[in-house]
Length: 440
Ligand code: FCB
Image 1 (cartoon, helix red, strand yellow):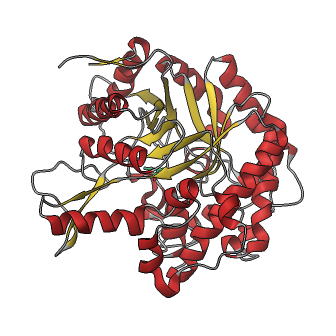
Image 2 (cartoon, protein in one colour; image 1 turned 180 degrees about the vertical axis):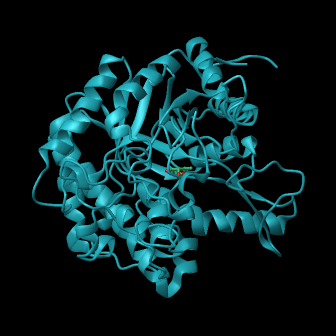
């Protein structure tokens, strides 16, 4: 295979999220999050597991940064636990919580690794949830206040900020199918949350710019490819409709200032309440867009979503491996919207890993998955999509939400009994990609 060279400034990194790795769920005055409550509720998480300890990163971050350094990461994407900073979601600030992210930031910078921060990756304060959560418009300014508290403390050292990670998952999995915290099953509510999250995003962008207009601000969206099952015009039209009515829920308002007409029509009565001024707030200029993508959907006019696709490989998540779909979806976003520069903020794969007798983890399938996806992203760049960096999900094996510890996505293996870390073959290979800027 011809080696694929990346631009010199390309920002290679890895990503994590607070609830999935930190542990220390009730230490140093941290407030309860909806994920603490959800995982402590019997029957919600595979095997009754919780993020109470997770990777114990709250205590082991120096060791984890040493590993990042060994990998040669140029950047590290992490999220902040909101109730660690504001235990009740609003009001009193916890200095101990701020101190943790302060130490983490300084240690990253000392290791020459750029901190790339996400304000909210799903661990919403339980106290705010009890006041109506994302449904209650009166709660939205609390997100902007939280953003400002963090920017005042870390904005002198962190340049790139994202508001939400995958708002669609917050709304859909949290409020419609109930598989994530807070576990509600109510589609109209989920639609209202979809809109309210966009308003909260807009308020947070204003708050961050208010603290420091030089910060670079973005949002992270989950955008899987949507492909037609065949070249039949009916399948193509069905796939286009699935994209327009379902997958543009955030892209469209953020980059055009209104919801896609096919989405408005499809929702009918379930379309959320909006207020004058909302759309302008939502469509404020962003400095970059984060895209998370793992797989694709295949749509047929007669059968809807097809799965499994005969002959395709699937990961442990039951997600199809289809790297060319990544290139296609990046082009689609770039062609349909005037988007700012893009960072791939998550991509990776869960496979059943084993520690071999030689003490290593020979995870060829993950390595191959990453190689294919890196290559397709490079092709998308050659097609004209402005992509500036790539964060592999994930740095460490971690708590995979409702699946508990059963799905391993890490470049680094974690033994959850002993907390011992071992860099997998995919991680060693990735460090070579980073040091040569080349995928072979
Ligand atoms: C994404 C989430 C991330 C992780 C990966 C596998 O949707 O942002 O936390 O669960 O999927």
